[in-house]
Length: 364
Image (cartoon, rainbow, N blue to C red; front, side, top):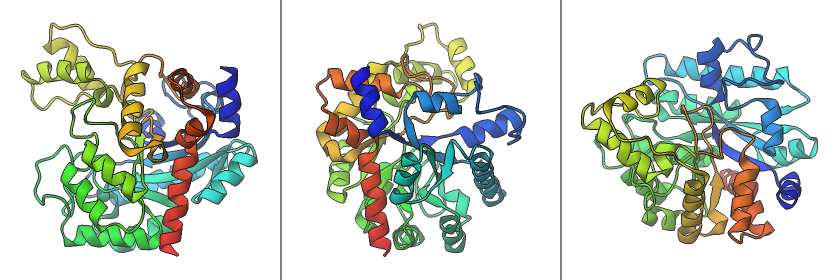
């Protein structure tokens, strides 16, 4: 691990997606006095000691809220939580929104804190709200979450538009204009393709894996990964078992024969899964994640891949990748596969920093 520790000290991990804000809401209604993140918080996947152990240099904190009439207000409340979190730990965290600010925070020994809205419902169909969110430091927006919005189809809802409508195209163009990254995780494959046709800036997948390896609609098909390379964007591979292990997906499918609406990513759904099938539960593994990273590299190239673990966003993670302290284990596995230091540095954070700079150049 000496080589990997040295590498990640110089090129720390920039993770594209962490759901600590909503997890902390569920745990303590955003009360930072209730649990001290400067120490161990075992009920979470994330705390400051484990971020340091995992060589995390920058984290995109996800602003995810339910899709309802209060989504915009709740998104602002999550944004407020991230700001208060950073203020609570000024020696450890620094609020950032640009590549230069990220690098300055890392140089100062702090974990750069960026924000991304997870779902177009967070702007309430208002370009004005979108612009205000950007002015407050939100750096990306996932166009949808699990359900469609009026202007874009989700990967996990019934298609209505076949991609984007005219307002959806306006949203993408306005995001380009103000320097907000277009995030294509959670959207349908047709929405991915449509957004890639419209955008004038590189896009990201903040937490998605490869559909060729694990056939779920949340993952990116190969033709989209090929287009992503031409767009100069980045796919940040996620660790969610349901998105990385085909055996796990097949096990869930067997349970869904009895209960079609089962959500495998919720704690309640997890308990129900065990009840509904007699088959042993497959374990997603570190090796599954490595296969996705290798596949995305093979299709899109090493310049178009990153990491978006989705910690604190689902009930369990692959063996070997239990929490935010686990990133060095992944990098060691890739080094064992023959990845050199330059390639590992691009995966760790070099590629997403390039995309941030490119988005700023387009906006300028």
